[in-house]
Length: 410
Image (cartoon, rainbow, N blue to C red; front, side, top):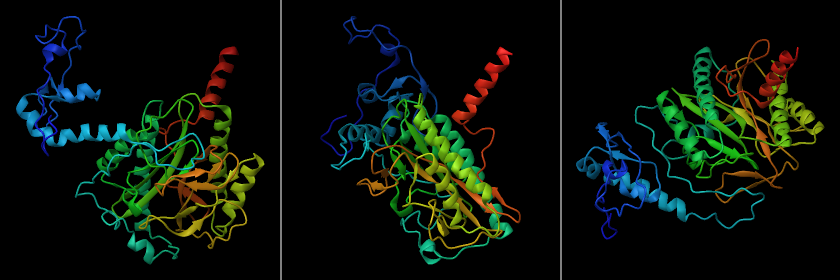
């Protein structure tokens, strides 16, 4: 394409003769030719078998895009050329000047994606301002059976999406790729990804690797072997939100990071086990802190669990540290999250220039897990409970492997 006009014309396409290794009149015969390739035509609504490829994608090393003829390629060019422009922006991106606390740096973030008109949306979807939250911020809600049914369905969908996202975690995958699929999976299930445009947040989920405590923005950085990464999924389905997250291991992770991740999960489950009518909300922090402090970890104080339902965030606030002053007593029908963020050493945090990404002040690793809970007459129900499709924890795999080894020995 030329650069002189606002909407450049597409360049001549590459056909499958050259791609198939057949004689190419423009080739000197010394260069190895590309193997045969084909795919469905990329023009929306066409889908015919296609072998013509976009030459600019080939030149830039982007994934192959196929068209069945020049006419389809020309029609699709305006939208397709956006891919090339985004690639150029990605290559040109440089992290803003900042005193970063660890090795992690921000990478290029793609523009906010759209949600189809038929999906029911929260009040902040367009403006970014959750007006209803600001109006009812301090009221603790006892939910009706109808509301509980709606929240349970949102949580079920959230669990499905998180399990699928967790299966994508491996070295080389970018958090942007995970976010793209999370966005698609939410829409496929008739749900809106709750973080999208909430106070302007640009993505469908939060991805927080290594020293990132929470609110990491999915970007072009590939996950690396040895990383840990938290994926936080929230969905809005038919007027109700559901919220959960887990921390995943990327490839071969060191033992200390494994210990941090396991301790974080166990502290959450201890707090959940204690949840029942009559319990003070402030006491969850005492349970979590006692368990984590014994293991020489610290509990983040800047962020807390929260009420959830028709509103994304509402009362009660659920701090995870001891000696907090949270207001509220657990009663049947209350729904809230517990989501401890546990740091390797210092509990203090620092926020990147994007005004979202919160990192540990010493650059050491942080882990988090979250469930949405319903207080019942006798205890509580985990609305975001793990299923057989959930990614197994590393300690579950290790325990299974040890058991199988013992059986063979016996």
